[in-house]
Length: 263
Length: 290
Image 1 (tube, rainbow over the protein chains, first blue to last red):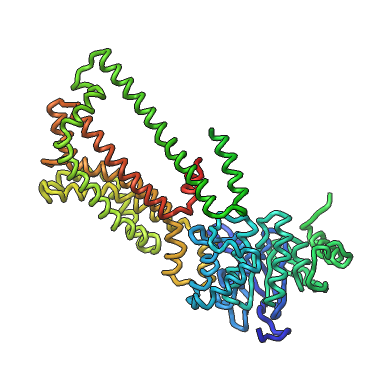
Image 2 (cartoon, rainbow over the protein chains, first blue to last red):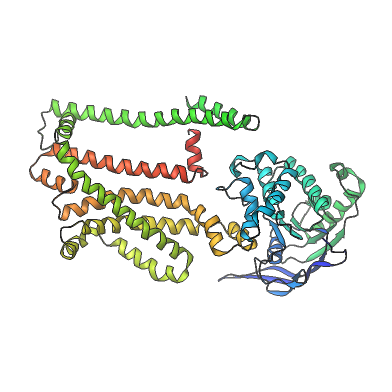
């Protein structure tokens, strides 16, 4: 982690994506440009179907772009890269493997030395309260625990960049708040660069250094908001005027776009 | 009864965090034994009642043996002609096991090939479907001409008849892997082999087993069809010969053995399935006892 602040880990300019189907074409994202700096926690926030997940998938090298340019670590993205960890919407755990093997899948797939990374896997699991569950099967865990395992899997090979696609979307409100705190503490310890996709304004403001607000399809950037709140943030920060001012600004952006309408 | 089981089950799950692993296993073992006994008692009761009804009808209406033999008569024949039946069961059993194994060893690899290559899918899949629609019995006379009265035509028919469900289910299983899992593999830069070993194959296994379980029952049919068309031994031969002599009690005795062969091979596979994929929803449900 010798990267100094100010260096762009992700650099996106005029990115566009059109999905072609035999009968129609869907303009998913259009003319999106922004940079993510080393160590930054950036959320991309938008209504469902605005192409924010597409954006992440392109950054991950799992989908192709239609136009524009995207660079990760100074290299054009033309396929999955090594130095990235991904947390998907659903936890995508393998039922036939226990918790530790699920985490170690990242290592095996990348053909990294298993012995060297096993302590790392255990340390990560311990840090999210799963110390007693190394041998448990995914189906024995709750939704929150499962998503914790998948976060450990994304971090175990110590990537510089973490991409998260609505990772708490399927969790209940209480679990979600706990996960926000846990993610913050993991992030504060590791200082990874994070691109976090979400549709929750609260989640975005709480977690991020910067919130990028996208318009409905075709997704473009409506607002790029810096969140200046002290860290570590406790849940009570959500009751402060500053926090609510940020929430209001984002909500007003959505209202101006007609994403949220009042009758 | 089932209500009672449900409550124990829930409290078992609630206690999961506090209980040591051994205790959890003991509870579920108790459940499993109860579940199994229960599973056996009901079908046997049904069968027993059917036999009693048949026996009564045969005795009351004096139905003659060559039309419908009484169950007691069938069992009598089963014991008296046991050496003869067992001698003839052995070649049938051989054909079932060897034929099924040969079929398995070709069907699953072909399924894997079809699922992993578009070209193979285009070229081979339609041919397989065509082959499946041919009534196997129509091929039988030709097979006899080619291979004579040896084991070979029986094996060929058994392989042909049990082949299709295994291929179809292997392909379906491998193709059903969710896109997210493949994305996970690709983003972790997993090789094709690793992706297959760690994700695609384990994911497909439950479906493969479903195919095997259909195929094993088909294999028994295949062996009998093979013996019907030309054999001097085997249970298929016994069926033809006994029916020709109107010894219906012997026919039914042979059928009882065939059912036993079919069921024991089916449950052997079920047992292997339980060991191989304990993580699968269907197995977990059974282990929970409902």
